[in-house]
Length: 188
Image 1 (cartoon, rainbow, N blue to C red):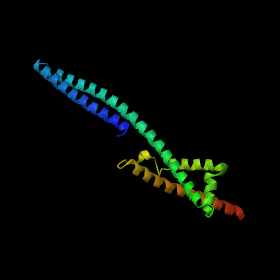
Image 2: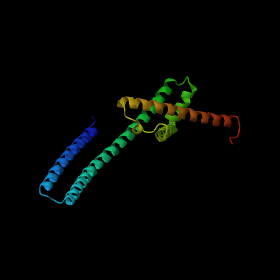
Image 3: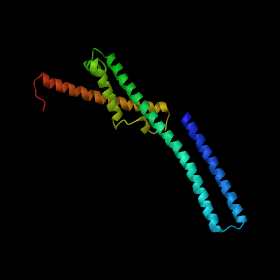
Image 4: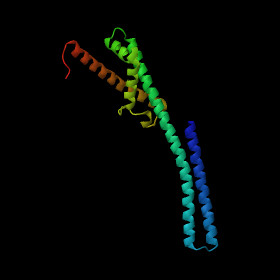
């Protein structure tokens, strides 16, 4: 268990214990009131009031804790998402460098995304597009039904495919634009 889920487990167990204590106290109170021939309307009203008060107290504390944990989990997922995207884009640069200078597309990708004055800006823009892409989402959007490493790997594959699509799309646009300019064709 992670630290946060361990803490959550402790709160759940404490809540269960409090609920058991509450039930025991209510049974004792109910029996005492019955033994003293208290009016049944008063008995019912008292049971309801005590239950509602204790339930509100327990649920507000629990929900505040759970809300804090959920916010922290979302922040952690966003951080890991950004990290995973940066690593995928970094691997694209490594792949392009492996094929440099033989492959013209690798040269173009390296110069545009990873080198020179505009490379840093273009790389950050690519990472931002990937973070904003609805197709990929965030690591926090994925069902965690398997190990963290498996979820991270699946997410990385999905991000890498989309990153390649974006790179190819931009390369096509640059090529078309330069071809039109080179051959004197006006772009409508």
